[in-house]
Structures are given as structure tokens and as C-alpha cells.
Length: 170
Image 1 (cartoon, helix red, strand yellow):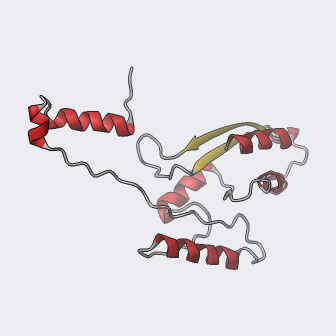
Image 2 (cartoon, helix red, strand yellow; image 1 turned 60 degrees about the vertical axis):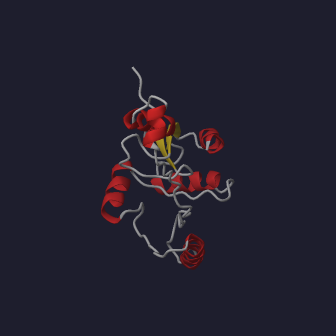
Image 3 (cartoon, helix red, strand yellow; image 1 turned 90 degrees about the horizontal axis):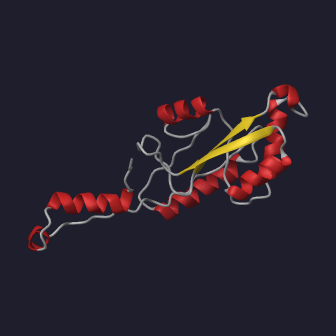
């Protein structure tokens, strides 16, 4: 992702700086996979743009992003994006959801939808989010063994949570 950010900053001078966030936020209000990034572009004032047109600027950004195959992206405003996520559960103006039990089948069907929609005139930034599933740990504490070692269940749970989630200090 840093390679993409550097390329944008080098080739699109209208972008003043970039702020990015990978994965979910601390509160868990914005669940995202570890392979997903929110990238916010801070733009220079429009009077400093080579061409004062938003569509032109997005085309310039698309040219840079075309050099990174496999990267799915869309352009939106932060508040618009959050509202879309809250109402529909996805980012973007038009969304197609496919449901089923098999992730491989879902990914194949999603790619078929992308392939069918991309050639439609006016369709821009068509992409699919890979359904990789989430990994969960299920840990059952042996209360007797913990007790023999001098630990209570709360202490073990706290230590495990710290190992998995980390802990805010200070």
C-alpha cells in the first residue's frame, strides 16, 4: 500500500498528503479485513490543480492505480462512504450482494458479476471484495489445570485477550 501512496504523491501533484488505515478500527464499528485499506487523500486547493475538475482528477488517479493490478478501489467522500455502509452494508452507489455457504463459489460468482458489469457504459470502479472468511480462536480454559498452576479463569482470559488484541497503556 505504501508503494501505491508513493506513486500517487509522485504522479498526482494535486494530492497534498495521504492518510491510510488498514483493517478494523479499535472500536470495531468499521469491520474490515486485514487486506482492506481506507485511504484518504488530502487535496491541495482547487486553484492549484492543473485541471480544476474532479472527474479529471479521478482519471489521473486511475492511471496511477492501473499500474497495480489486483488492487480494487473506489472513489467516494468519507461521510458518503460511512452512510452507504450503514444503510446498505457496503461502499458505493450500486452494490450487488451474493449469499451462500461456500466462499469459493461466492468469489467465483462475484467475479462473474464484475465481468458482466464492467463493460456497461458509465460503470466505473467496479470491483469485488474477496470473501476470505474470518479466523476465530475458540479456547476452552481447563479450570482445574489453571487452578493447580495458581491462576483463576479471569486472569487467563485477560492474558489471552492481551495476546490477541493488544492493550492500551498510558
